[in-house]
Every structure is written in C-alpha cells, then in structure tokens.
Amino acid sequence: MKKTFYLFNPGRMSRQDNTLKYTAYDEDGADGQTRFLPIEDVADLYVFGSLDANSALYNFLGKHGVSVHFFDYYEHYTGSFMAKEYLLAGKLQVAQTGHYTSPKKRLVLARKLVEGAAFNLLKNLRYYQSRGRQVGEEIAQIELYVAVLPHATSVAEIMGYEGNIRQTYYRCYEQLVSVPGFGFGTRSTQPPQNELNALLSFGNMLCYAACLSQIYHTQLNPTISFLHEPGTRRFSLALDLAEIFKPLLVDRTIFRLLNKKEIQPRDFVRELDGCLLKETGRKTFVRVFEERLKETIQHRRLNRAVSYQHLIKLECYKLTKHLLSIEEFQPFKAWW
Image (cartoon, rainbow, N blue to C red; front, side):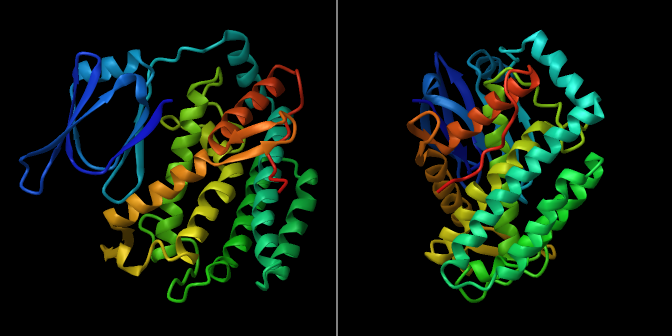
C-alpha cells in the first residue's frame, strides 16, 4: 500500500533506476544517511526542509503520479508539484465550471459545505460538553448561525456566517484543552502568536494538502471551487473540502496531543514575533495526524470499514455525482 513520506531534514533526492534515493544533509551540509524508497510505495511527499532535486526526478515522479507538497521554514504551505492530470473528463469539467458560474448552483454547494463544517464543529463541542465543559452558550450561538444559512442569498454572506461560526468555536478552544499554559486569545496567522494557533496553522496546512492529494485521484478540477473564491495560483477546491474535515482531523489531533501531553511547551520556539513548532513537535504532530488519517470507522451506507483518508475521496465522489445531476451532495457529518 502506498504511503505518504515526510521530509523534515534538508537533503538531495534523485532517481536511481526505479527507486527514489534520498540523502539527508547534516548540520554542516555534509552527506548523511541515505534512504531508498521504491516508487511503487510512495503516494506523495511532504517537504518541510530544503530539497535538492532536478527535472529528471520530477519527470519520474510525474509519470508515477506522485505529488510533492512544499512548506516553508515557518510551516506555511507554499505550493505543490502535481503530476499531469490523468483523470480529467470533459463532461465533468463543463459541469463543474457551470456550477461555479451559476450563482444559484454555487450558492447551494457553498451552503452545504458550511453546514457540514458546522455540524462537525458542533460534534466536537457536544462531546466535550458531555464531559463537563461549559460550552453551551457557544453551541447555541453556532446553532443560530446554522439556522439562518438557508436564508443567505450570496456566497459572500455564507462566508460571513462561516467566519462567525469559526470565531464562536475558537472561543471554546482553551476549554477543550485541559492543560494549563496554552492560551488561545484570538485566531492569529502568519505568524501564529501562541502555541494553540501554531498547532492550528500547521494542522490546517496538512489537512489542505491531504484533501488536494485525494482530489488529484478523482476527475474533479482542484482549481474550481464553490465556497472559497478560485485564485490564480491555488487549488481552492481543497480549501472547500478541508472545511468539512478540519474539525475531525485537525482539531481532534490537537486535543489528543495536548490532553495526553504528547506535545508540550518545549516543542515550540518563539521568534520573529511569532510562535512555531520545533522539528520534534512537527514530527509528533505528523505521526498522530497520519494515525488519524488511517483510523477507520464503520461506514453506515457502505457497511464496511473506511479510513478518514478514504472519506475525503468519497466526498469528492459525492461532489462529482452532484455536479453531474446524479445525486444531491450531502456533506459528510460525523454520526458517532
């Protein structure tokens, strides 16, 4: 089974026959340990350190459909190398574009995406409310925002409600973490101002890249989205899908890491008026996030065990059916 590989150290990657050869650099820039990765085992690569590579390597990766996602020193997602689209279908491309250009059709999908995200946020809050956390006021407020979503008349209005829902949810964040010393304040990015914001930024980037990887293996065009405005250089459909899965993949990973003390204040560094994860913290986060992606649930409709990673691809299939007028899109909502 193919796997995702994370490259934290600077190094050089090259092709050697049908294998990837990766040589890490030590602190002095000298060659360190060399590792060989059979191309058949590689699903995609996440690069956090500097990577030396040449066009021959990217040609090789492209032929095998391996995507490479890049993050800078400050843990910001900076871009991806995506292999040539191999599943594009003209009929779906036309339908996807038509749903974006039609305000009425786009509004339907934007509303569904926010409804799914809000439902999964509320699921987290109710779970902790049942364990004594005082989050009843925020739950009621979010339910009010959800109730008015059907009356929204524009995508901009939907985005406004989505922002309000998020702000209300983040007010509870400190309560959901039972470890003292992790203040939240308000949501801050570029750079995050404290440890919780640093974890959120890092996790959101991983969730975005995971969604992008799954979209690549469907016939959807990742640049045409419905909730977020398509940009000139970003894969905005991944942002749309990530909204649904962030509460389940990112937030729950953070709650586990902190409540079980797998990540502690020593795993962060404060510099340049911001707070960032150290390499030890990033590795711990990635390990638990990967475990979360591989965790399975019993799917009620399919009647079989399905991983969270596969749930993202199923969401792409549901969206495809909606665009082709086969079945109305219903966002994934956690039922357990």
